[in-house]
Length: 150
Image (cartoon, rainbow, N blue to C red; front, top):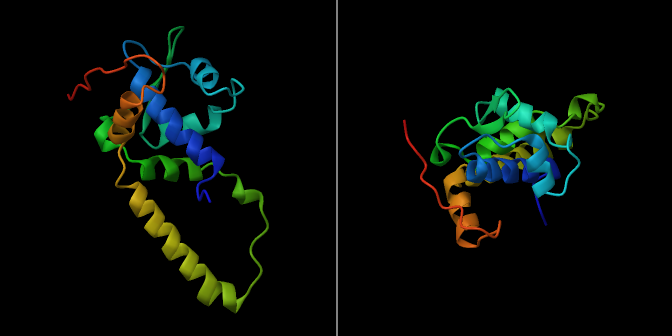
């Protein structure tokens, strides 16, 4: 059973992809979508959320695209999921019905489980995921490159 939404999984994959491919120039949304067999505009809203949350940096211009906004080791899967969750679209859903069972029992337990899950994701850095991707050569080529710290 997968506990993450499709959007959250794609967000993590997008950030790792960008971390691996953003040198020497940013990764365009079009190239990112093509590598993951998605429609070109599919990731647009989540990429913008990742920019707003300081995970990615948008670069304008004809050779523009996205690059990581900070060191790979300083970005966690939890950070990415929180950013992706900010654009879930649940604002349009009707409120939960008033229920003591939901309010006092189910809700707090599910909230605690969600917080534990996010805490585990906070222990996984983009650097960790990049190393796994490089070791398994998921893009077929050797992408090993230095991650410069400024």
